[in-house]
Length: 306
Ligand SMILES: Cc1cc2nc3c(=O)[nH]c(=O)nc-3n(C[C@H](O)[C@H](O)[C@H](O)COP(=O)(O)O)c2cc1C
Ligand code: SF4
Ligand code: SF4
Image 1 (spheres, helix red, strand yellow):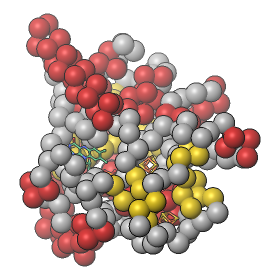
Image 2 (cartoon, protein in one colour):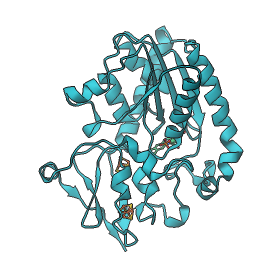
Image 3 (tube, protein in one colour):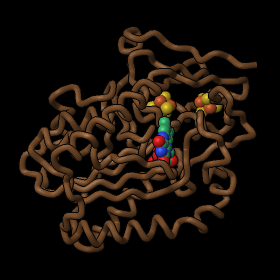
Image 4 (cartoon, helix red, strand yellow):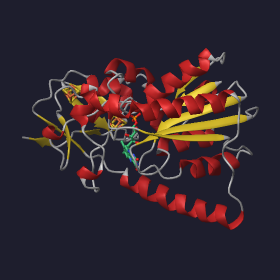
């Protein structure tokens, strides 16, 4: 089976790794493939070929962004050739407000004559700043999460969902009943509105950098889209590379030098305790950023906050 995954700060990578292990223990052969692509999509033939399922079963494992399947993942999925695939499942991680990614996936798959067979949502820690929702309404206590206390308290939910998913998937059971008629079109319309708002919210780059930046390069290393590059010991965001809004740069910066409006250093940062910068960076796009490549972009200096 091919397990397509994406993760900003490790929650989903942890889930994908665990799922892969558990299915492997049941005799499945699992190949993992990161859902990342140059400039947000599957652009050229070689890249497209690397995404070919070569299996009759695929899994999609990703986080919820703004109640939606992240935009770059929708983009890649819409270009995937799923001929020969007979069983499709999805496992999404979220922080308490998941929405209906099963509807979104169904809509994409339907156009390819396919259907979603099984769908699971796993609640984990929120990895993005609270933005418009009051912070206290979240289960967000990042220092506690990194101490491992949250992991101990709430990880039973992750474990329970993982074993349920493993059992369903290894039996190739179908748990999703596709909606029909008016109910289906109403659900599609609702998800279209959610997607439109999510994509609009995601257009702006909210990051600033302060004087604590040491030029260490970790933000470049963990950025899965290749948007961040560090030059002359300062991070720059390339104008023509789509941001995946995963908050990896913000959260993995060891000095918390990357900031967003209304969110200070004392608010802390989050990454899954088991997923280091080295581990998360394994999914990063490996395309060579030559000077010629960089010349195609405006190098966006973040506003310097003193
Ligand atoms: C830009 C952004 C938007 C998010 N929107 C939602 C949301 O609408 N609902 C929700 O429950 N969690 C939301 N989250 C939280 C993540 O889905 C959750 O923390 C997830 O487990 C992160 O996975 P990762 O560590 O693999 O990136 C959002 C996170 C980000 C970065
Ligand atoms: S990770 Fe932080 S300290 Fe390191 S280069 Fe990036 S912004 Fe600077
Ligand atoms: S710039 Fe930051 S938020 Fe955007 S894709 Fe890179 S790591 Fe993720």
